[in-house]
Structure formats: C-alpha cells, structure tokens
Length: 567
Image: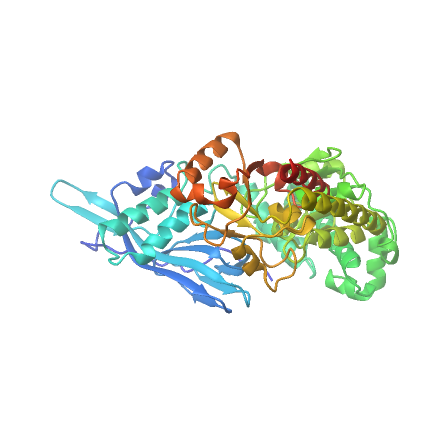
C-alpha cells in the first residue's frame, strides 16, 4: 500500500497568551543553528509527567497530541507508531513528538514496562518591548523523532519531573529546560537543507516501488509520482541508480524471491505470486535469466560473495571459514574484509553509498533485524537480504541459522565441539584456582551504568565458566531461556544491594572515560564496602574488545577471563 508519511491536518492551533491578532511565527525559527537561540525568550510549561510501571500487556495512544510529548522508554519491548509509521522497540529508547502528531505505544505481552510520558508546552516571545512581552505558542521543534541519549541523564530528569508537585513551579521549568538542552544538539540543521529536488522525486518513487513490487507497476505511474515525462524520468532514474526503473523493480522482485527460497518451504508458484508473478512458468524463466539457474536449484548454490551488515555476523562468517567480500567490522578478526561504514544502531544515519555494494557484487547480504529496513531502502535491489533476528536466540542460535544459510553446518558443529572442550578445561582451571566465586559484570558508558546477565559481556563468566551472578541478576534470569529474555539492567553507582560479588568486572570505552567514571563510582562511600573492592578483585576491561557477542570473539574473551580469574 502506498503511504504518505508525515501527512496530517495542518490547521492553525497557535495559542496567544495576550492579543489573538498577533502574527504566527514562521518556520524560520526551526532553521537556526543554535539551540540557545531557539529557547531564547521562551517559556516552558509542564502539562503532565507520568511514570508507567506495569508487568502486563499495555498500550497507549493519542490520535492528535495536544502538546509537545516526550516518551522515555527505560524498560519497554514492543512497537511505537508515529503518524502511521511503525518502529520496533527492544531496548532503552526516547522519542520526541510535536503537537498534532498521532502517537501510539504497544508493548509485548509479559514484559516489565517502565517508561515516562512528559507533555509540555513551549511559548516563544512574539513581541518584546520595555512595557510588555507577548508570547505565542510554538508548535514546531528543531529536532523530533528518535533521540540518541544520554539515557542516564534523561532518566534522572524524567524521574524528577514525575515527582514535582507543582507543574508550573520554577523548578519544573528549569528541569524542562535542562531536558531540552540534553535532547537537542547544539548544531541543528533543517532536514531539507542541502537536498535538491531530484533526491525528493527519487525517494518517493523508490518507496512506491518497494511497497508495491508485488503488484503491477507502470512506468507512467512512477513518472506521474515524480512529476516528469516518462522517458525523461526513465533516463534520469538510470543516471542515478545505474539501472532503469523496470530493471530496478525486476531486481527487487528477484531478490525477494531468493530470500523466500532460502528461508521458507513455499512452493515455486507461491513464491512467484508473493513477488508479483501470476504465472509460475514465466517467473521461472525470468528467474533463470536473472540468476543463471532455475529457482528449484537456487538453494543448492554456494554463495561466495557475502556482505555482512552486522559486526557479530561478520565474526560468525569468519568462524565458519568465510571471509565476507565487505562487512561491518568490530573487535578481533582472523582476516580483515573490506570495511563498510554502517550504523551500529537502527536510529543512526546510513552513511555508506550504494557504489560500495555494487563494486563487490554480492550474492547475499546478512543483517540483524534492526538494520533490515534501512538495508532494504538503500540496497534492496542489489542482492537478497537475509535477516537473522538478534534477540530471538543466543549466539549459538545465530551460528546455527547462519551456518544453515551458507551451507556450513558441519563447520558450525566442529566449532561447537572445540568450544565445549575449551570451556571445560577453563572451568576446571578456574575451580582449582579461584573456587566457586561470584562475578558481577558491568559497563560504564555515557548511556549510564549497566549490570549484565549471561549474554554479551557476561556470557563467558556465566555460561562458559558457569560462575554465579549477583542475587538480583539471578532473580531476573529465573525462568528465562539462557541468553534470551534478559540482557542487562540499569543501576545507580553506590546502590549495590543485591549486586554484591567476589569479583567485579567493569567495561569502559576509553582511557579518558575510564578515569572519569571510576572517579565517580569510587567517590561513593559504599564503594569500599563492596566485596570485590575489599578483596582487591576489580578488573577494568576494554569495552570494544568485549562487546562482540559472536564465536571468534567469545573464544578470545574466554582466554582473557581465564587469565583474569586465575592470576
């Protein structure tokens, strides 16, 4: 279905505090580069601040927001829908909306929820003299949508706002001002700045093709959407995309067909219909012309040119003996493929150009689910994109799924056998040297302190070495599958109740951050009473070396953990 994101009723909802005949503010204020200039001579009014904490399925919706609305999802798994555009949420997230936005939240069942919903109004001075000032309600914002952080500071202010007794107090206004300074970067540029018209027509027609490839698409319709003559549109499209519109649509359809052939048991006729071909025999001929072999034999082919859009999956491929032709790289690897500049999180911009992918001519593209939508948008016509869900299974499940796709199941089995023998030797050595110690594993970053469970940073301690976690971590893990369901929890430095351990492992991202954060945490009087501190068993590790949750890196982390615990 063709959608029009961002379309809504643009009626005037301006609100004057004094004379109603004052002129409306224009959008020029949105293009100022300094956030201080935007908030200069502004009044902030807190309308409502709410903390939501439940343990059951929950949903909330507003068809048209009356105020600026900020949502901070501290613990939330589900989806957020803004103006009809759906986004999955599976970790700490923050979202800022302007008045008039349609906003809804739907949680997954049986997940603990902790989130803050803050409604506020912003008034800007419209007339300023020595005798009087006239304020007008500001409906716009230089920054909207997903906010990257810092989550620790955001949570602190959100919590204070929910407990502020008087919403119109000076303290509430100061807290709101501090929050907005935190959400809005110093340099704010208009989204339209630097974009020419061809980019607009190209984006709209590409979106239409991605959403309607399973239906008949005519060149005349695309040209109409672009506002051009069909022949001119076709020439201009080819100059930008290195293929004409019909070739682009065909490539998108064939890549979607390849994905279905690799990941489902659908019959050829069902695959054909799902990608827009009613005649399975015609589809088979087109597929053979495009791929070089029939769809019935496609899954038996060896995919030699593989691109990895996820650094853990790059590690998985290397473990299976496959060096990608291009990949996102992080941590230690036995070989270095061509590095791609790709976002590490779904909310970050896509910087890598199409040409880098066209140059390596991939047979297959692997990605996590958080990058699948952007991959489809940028390179959906280049090669089939196989999505391996990140949170549905653990590292071993990822390895099994990837090995089955690239026909390396035997290599995966051999690695698992070697790894199990390695972990058995390591467990025996730790038991002989250190005994059954408890270990706490935390990260100190700008996002705030986190205590990890048996996934990511904690995997080698709790699953490989089978050491005990702090009581609060063990309670969170009770009844959940290993490596799935609970990854980490936030904590406040100094609040060690239930997080005590014989050994404390702290991951930091830089030397500078290490010094600053350690100074912060050790300044707390309770620090010296922490068991690991009293025992002299605090270990600081490099975040970048331990963040990769994948086989090759896990083996290296296991060696480091063994040395740490037995030295």
